[in-house]
Amino acid sequence: MNKLTILVLIACAFGIATAKSPTHFSLRAESMGGAHVAVVDDKEALHYNYAGLTQINRLGNYDKRPEQGYYPRNWIGDARVTFGGAGDIFAFLSTYGDVKDLQDLFRDAQKDANTITFNHPQISSTTSAILDSLVKNPKYIKTINSYDHKALEARVKFDAELAFHNFGAAFWMNGSVAPYIDAGLILPYVVVDTFIIDAVAQMGGAYEIIPNQLSVGLGGKIVKRHKTNMVTIGLANYNTIADTLKEQLGDGTDDFFDSKTFSFGIDLGVLYQFNREIRFGASLRDIYFKSLADETLIPNFTIGANYSPKFMNSNSGFGRKFNVAVDFADMFNNERNYKFFTHLNFGFEIEQNIAAFPGLNNEIRFLVLRLAGGFRGGYPSAGIGIELLRFFSVEAATWGEERGYYTGQDENRIYMVQASIGF
Image 1 (tube, rainbow, N blue to C red):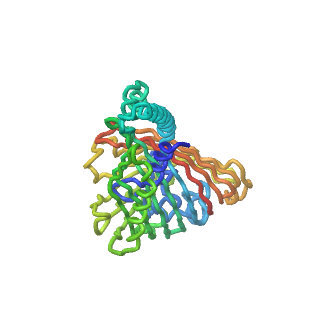
Image 2 (image 1 turned 135 degrees about the vertical axis):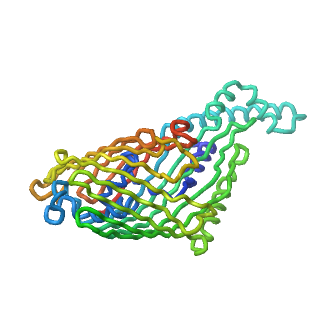
Image 3 (image 1 turned 120 degrees about the vertical axis):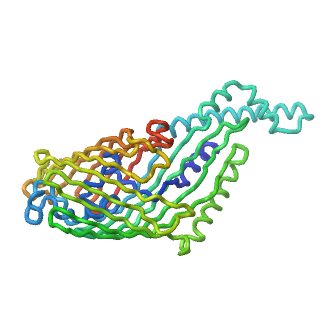
């Protein structure tokens, strides 16, 4: 692999992206278009609506929640460790090919320049000769124009989550980088406006005000965010990339445990079981008491509903779960993405036990398949998840995010894969 190829891949792998607030990426929720504030029947209640913690070890349990006993049993709790990563696979593949083509052209131009300077000693600047050779090559111009201001994005995540009936806690780290490649006047360069890494520790609980009907939740979080300045890496100085990244890493670790750089916030949630098939939810999340990395963050207020038809659910050894949900999300955020459909999320999911011990109330299942789809802010989403022996699971999801100022202006397509272990 040549140096310029390595340059682009490293720049994409080591950065972490901006967000209005630290954002946890749940592939179950994202594959449903982000519509989850009224679903929250597992550990995802920690991130979307703490009130949903009251449902853990209640769904599928005729004794403790008769009206929802027809659901598949959601066990006694969730404890998971998850690793994941994401990026626009197709954009990376096309850019990889462009970079290789450009490197070949640059190498040929360098050979020509060496020949010219050897045969013509009066030409003392090899760099000038290289540039002259490249400019005269039509293929160089065509190749470089193929990724002029081409945006890329990569994300990484780590989650450690624990959730039981009425209580949950988590520690997670999230981030992404969104560099872009510019053709430049003569030589291309990679620009990363900001590196960001978020680390979040959170804990909270839920309480049923009206048993089996109305629940409220409250959680607190401690957040650390590190940001760096713009990094620009040109073709002429790519040998310095290792030193640049080392300096940025040092800046990020030097003050990581400085308490002055931490921010504190709370999350609030409500869940109302209208009847055994319909739930309504609302959450006010990311209420921070001070700025985070010198940024004032806007709280996220979301309302939603979930419909789970009884005839589509099965509480047996080969249990099945079916949900249809809709959210009106992030209602306070009108600075960008202010159009109506940008806030509207819609999705569905179906989860089916493929292999299990029949008759054991869904408590021993060998293989579970989950399929989901929807629309997030007007962009389609989809996902698939496979769980083996309740202990190991693999999930993949794709969704779109708006980079512009209104729905449909500039889609950022995300493809994420994650693996987790736990129970």
